[in-house]
Image (cartoon, rainbow, N blue to C red; front, side):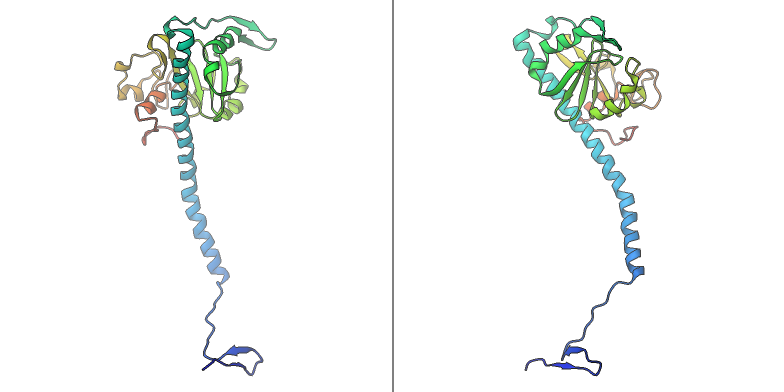
Length: 244
């Protein structure tokens, strides 16, 4: 038998056999729900951002290490063993604003540029006065005579370091915004050892060396943070002393 529609005394239409159970949320209930969502977001979003930043650093460090050493190996086919390459010289000129190392760009153009996919490379006016090399993934290296400074995010160099052109870099962000490598022709490539032989670099020394250790206060900079991350499979250790 079909349900019948009828009109009640108030003039509204109802269907026989059905009772409406719809109930709207009150303003208080909506505000409580939004408050809970806000608290959860406040607790989780910073952690998500932190993990994302760490992931970017890990990925770009590993990629840089692989790409730059592959480029060196490919260059040896055309230029012979690395140990016999010409050394980058301190051949400075004054560009009217600051000194630059004109030999550095010539060296880079010969030995590395043909074997890398990059956005740009130019003489650097930084303390190292080497070559600024901008990679397609948004990272940057400064290749100089004494060291390779790698920024996973080139923006960190552009925004924080440009003010220090001609002055030593901000070493308080070493191991966070930038990471140290060195070029070892006698070992055939770029390594994160920074002046030490690997057998002397115990985990304890990586973390606690007073000169270059991966800790808050050092006399130089936290160059050994790079090796600490490499030994962990290019993953930032859970007990890493700095946040990103």
